Length: 125
Image (cartoon, rainbow, N blue to C red; front, side):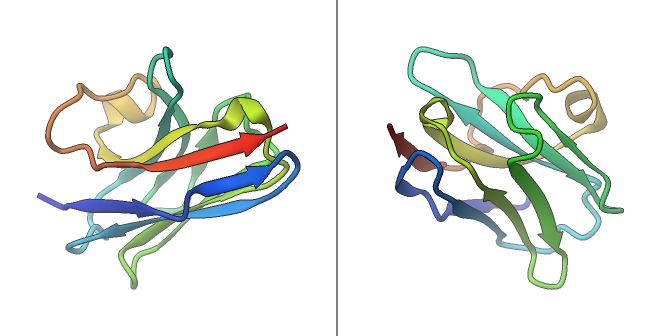
């Protein structure tokens, strides 16, 4: 099973940018679907962006035009470039390999040990 480690979070002012990275312990080039999720305090975990092995992407309406997901299979890394950040983007961000049933529905996979620790993003107003 591929282990994923998220990094790149931090504190930023509204309107600023951050780039999150998700490094895999092994090759995920054969993994079709990768996604970034986030969870704010008191809220459900939600899918923010997803990318297929072929490079097709999808985004939550709340981040379209501001966030960009990309993957570098040679580096076994997935990125999330976040621009024009808003206070409501404040959350812990997680990356995950997912099956098509989760990718296309946007429903997060069950919470289990396969999730990483995530990286905290805090946007101040």
